Each structure stands twice: as structure tokens, then as C-alpha cells.
Length: 108
Image (tube, rainbow, N blue to C red; front, side, top):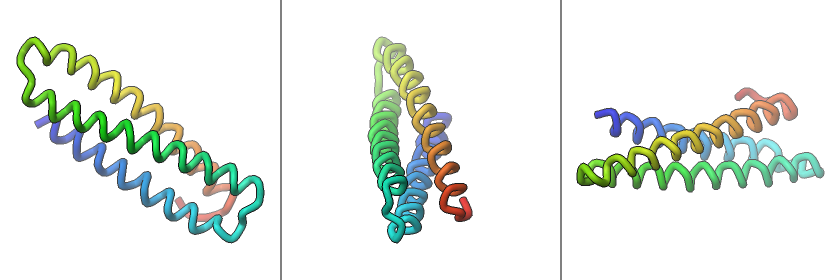
């Protein structure tokens, strides 16, 4: 059941990224100065990367369930690497959204 828990966690984080991005972009839409434009680009880049990585991770986890013993070891390495990469992207997301919430003074 560990794989299912990871898929649910990734799905929740993916949803948070999407909702945070929407909320921040709505909040800064009236303030499209250079700083807001840079923030918008950064939000789009990180959220796209997060969605891409999470989709690949979830596909690999599904593949892992069906894999033969020979394939499992390689897939487990790939999953571990993808999780690490996704965590880095998540940490970037948290940093950018935290800065945005301070800069534009909205609750996050």
C-alpha cells in the first residue's frame, strides 16, 4: 500500500500547486509591474515542472506494480530519483509562494 499512499500524496501536492498558482495569479493580476511579471513566469515554470514530474512519477509507480522482478530494481531507482527531483521542485514552489505571500501580503 506504500505506492498508493505516494500517489495520493503526489496528487494532493499537485492540487495544492494548481490552487496556489491560481490564487497568486488572481491576486497579482491587477499589479502587473516587472516584479509581478517575473513572479508569474516563475510560478508558471515551477508549476509546469511539478506537474510533469508528478505525472512521470505516478506512471512509474503504476509500472512498478506490474513489473517483473528484473524490472523492479531499475524502476525503484527511477522512482527514488523522481521523488528526489519532485521534492526539490516542491521546495522551490514553497519558497516562491512564501516570498509572493510576503511581497503581496496575502495569506498562504
